[in-house]
Length: 90
Image 1 (cartoon, rainbow, N blue to C red):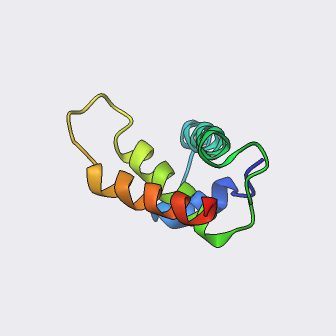
Image 2 (cartoon, rainbow, N blue to C red; image 1 turned 60 degrees about the horizontal axis):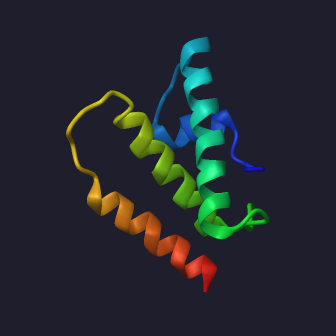
Image 3 (cartoon, one colour; image 1 turned 180 degrees about the vertical axis):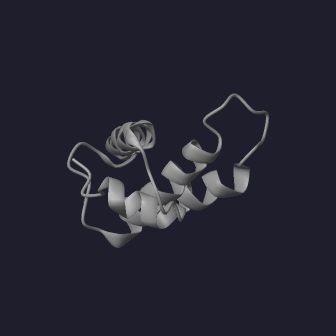
């Protein structure tokens, strides 16, 4: 399970004030990033590795910013995350 907290993510996103709806969205995105890391790195991925935490924050930021069904492509962000995960895997 991810060691990221809602506060960690809101700090990363620069969100000063949250309500229940925002906290719920961020909690769901943390769970999604955890599932993504398990799929990319294995069930026992290194949750305390700072590269993994950063990759999770980047992924969460991308998902938060594009949570509507926009046509924006975030290829650069996805390449950065993939590169971090490849480093951890190696």
